[in-house]
Amino acid sequence: MIKSMRKPIVVMTAAFAITLLASVNTTFAEMNFAQTVVIPDAPVATSIMVDPTIALSQNFGAINLGSGSSVDAGEMALVSLAARQVQLAKTPDGARTVAAQLVATTYKWSAKQMSCLDTLWTGESHWNFKAHNYSSGATGIAQALPANKMDVIATDWRTNPVTQLKWGLRYIKIRYGTPCKALAKTRWSGYY
Image (cartoon, rainbow, N blue to C red; front, side, top):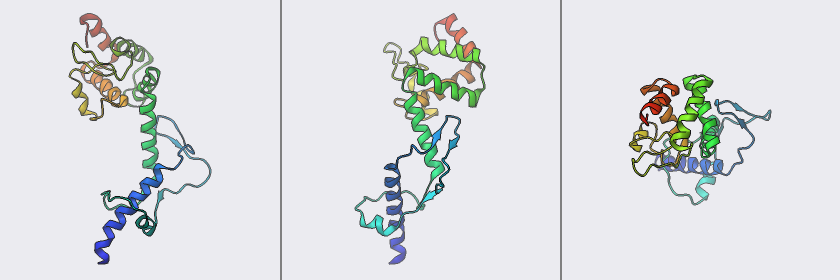
């Protein structure tokens, strides 16, 4: 009887912990987009454990979260960072900022290449993640055609501008090597 109760208790505990974490104010940490987290001087626990009796006294539905009953603060900080990047990239200037951060950490392209990227994607979509060309079907900041090509990065490309940016940068790197070469192709043929 005790062994059969263990898994539901762990699941309920984890569900309660996630619910608790979702309601916590996370503004205590400052983050930059290089995935560095600055924690204030006050000690912060690396994980949160919840009393299973409290979780059981609450009427939560069963959610299968595996066998873990704690949530790592580092993982939560990365989730927060990703959410902030997505929110920032929903504006054209924010998308430029996130793209520059992705380029700096992954591709190491020069300022000249970033200028070419800005010109290229301004011409394609004006850095609008909701951009859609109704005649061709091209979609997103980088105007992927067909749009579901972006599934190689993530399936949330319809609503996540960071997925679109990652796909577009990867596409340029694989197909042309640099944004300036992609821009030259666009100027020559009208597309890249």
